[in-house]
Image 1 (cartoon, helix red, strand yellow):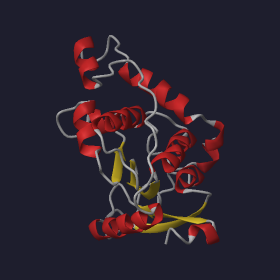
Image 2: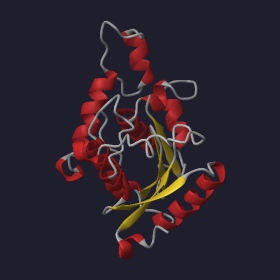
Image 3: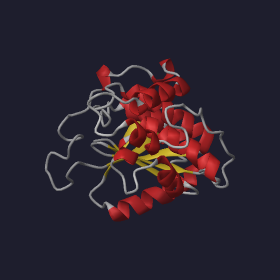
Image 4: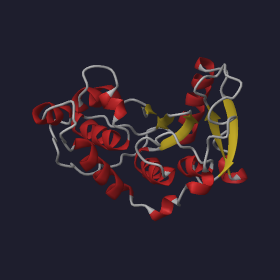
Length: 224
């Protein structure tokens, strides 16, 4: 299905819902999408966005539930210092083939998922085109997230497979395979979606998260 994109110009998005049993099928059936409010992914620098978000999420303020030492422990060994982008890797398998396999598995686990066909140059840009607002509690302009995902498409062979009310699921043809690579990618994920670490499985640290994504051919994100 993904190999047809080059011919049709339509990106297949598996549309998940907040509650698949709800007749509204939020956000898709309820109209909680806002394409007219989004900017263009091309107008944003992904490296600059990630660095900016990292600074925001690692900052300690008076209302923080964690003290300075606890906050820095979450993002060790980097602390508050943005480590920069991870280097891209050559994909060992075809990204579109992997995306198709992931889509089949996702549909098996979530049979009520619907298919959307989006006129967009890539899966990353399809998120902005449909007006998805999943990360709105952190940032209202989905185009910024699309810019980062588009960069991941190039560096890691990532492909957007499924998207829900506040979730995003990517297949990844060239995931990090070493501890250092995984830590750098984990830092990008923390900047992109801090809830993956803050509210993920214990322990809530960058290092533990890096272990989980090492060699993993899927990346899942959830925003509170």
